[in-house]
Amino acid sequence: MTNTSKKMTKREMFEQIKANYELTAEEVAFIDHELELLSRKNSNDKKPTATQLANEGIKTAILNYMEVGKGYTITDFIKSVAECAELSTPKVSALVKQLKDDGIIERYEEKRKAYFRLV
Image (cartoon, rainbow, N blue to C red; front, side, top):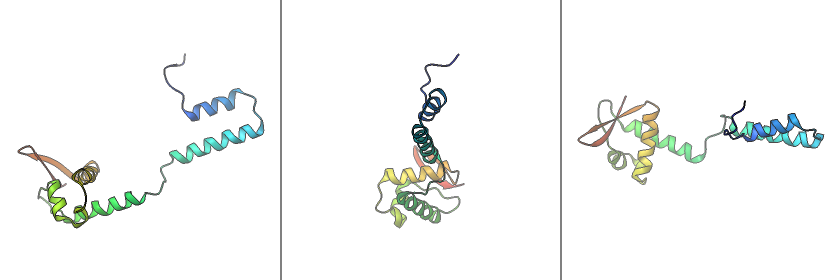
């Protein structure tokens, strides 16, 4: 018994059509092409965008600024790291969160204020 509440993916739909219908060579070629596009779209070997590359440079600058054992706020980064000077607080916060999620830095709180330090 199949679960009818689960929506079929585009890939599953194309494979069903290919398996259950008599198709012309042109129709099969079209479906194969669409399946190839789906595979390419979902592959992990995409090149990073220009923004992603720029963000990596900013994250590196933040890490170079930090000293082991010292805590920093987002405001500290904006005031002291040249690459962060023109950025908004949410943007810097998002980049710092990525570093935290990668396990490079850790977040802790003192008197309800968030600080970050190198792991």
